[in-house]
Amino acid sequence: MKRYMLDTNTASHLLREHPAVVRRIVAAPMASLCISAITEGELLFGLAKRPDTKRLHLAVREFLRRVDVLPWESATAECYGMVRADMARRGKVVLAPLDLLIAAHALSVGAVLVTNDRAFGQMADLHLEDWTE
Image 1 (cartoon, helix red, strand yellow):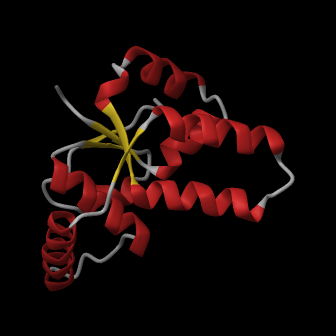
Image 2: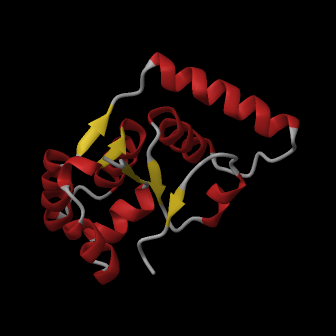
């Protein structure tokens, strides 16, 4: 089964009920969807910045209960180190630090990264899909 890792921006689109994103996620088998522990951290950071937004807190917590959150492991760290060194050699370090961690995580587990951030296109061998279209 193909695995889809939702980037933080895709998770945010889902939480804001973007129609195309909701449609694609509902159509996908739940077991095919995952997020990186890095994305979980970004979502929780967003909650910490907005402690009074009860609806958002409920939505994020429910999402995190349902989606598979993949842990950051040594194999992922190995992939990250190699990818970052390769991009630096080619002068292609255009991703923000957390985005590079998420992209390496998707690569390390063979997942398609679901994002609408075009900067990820600079990363060799990373399979991307944009579910906002």
